[in-house]
Image (cartoon, rainbow, N blue to C red; front, side, top):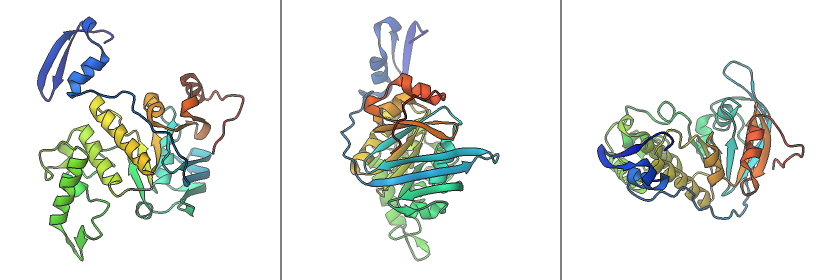
Length: 306
């Protein structure tokens, strides 16, 4: 829209239309790209605060180089709440996600889930306690690329009944399970049996969300869930996260997309140099204030960290 004279829209390998830039707008182009109306502003129901699901207390951790990445970090997330974590890349967001999900050791402090200390528990133990993880690197960390869609959908449950019995997988159940999730989460795939790596980025992300949320987790840790996705897939992923929060799940949403955070979060925590620079209610948040905290300019008056 900034530099074009004409715009040609492609959808599913075909040219949908060519239009003069001066005679179109963002909404019209998006509708042609996706094939339906896209809601840029999703409706967020008022939050009724439940009990605290996740509590992070005075957390410290090191980065891959052995240097401090998290420094005295404290916050909490309640039932049905989406806490957005904003910040410029490299300010401790990745390390925070990894500590909560058991992929990185904390050096000090605590991670508490529903009143129980899960600090430095293994990823398997944390999964077993009802924590879902939507990783930043969806191909490398989110699935096994060469395995089928159906096989990727059971990676968290294949050890237990009815997915398996004794030493053998229940193929009939796995196929039924896959077909149900493909339909429910609108995963576009030629078959449940194709390798997951052949799906588009948006459908890979929907596959990961289906696997992680279909068991109704108490906490969802979502790292950059819509990064690199088209507008249609982005809208669907955000809707799925909202549906999970309305169900009662607590959601920690880490994103560098400030618009995304301000669209679906209830509160926004800003990270700078491994610390919480401030936490604000989204309804009261201003872009300028968030931007200032992201680069280390803190307001004179402290904001609440609860």
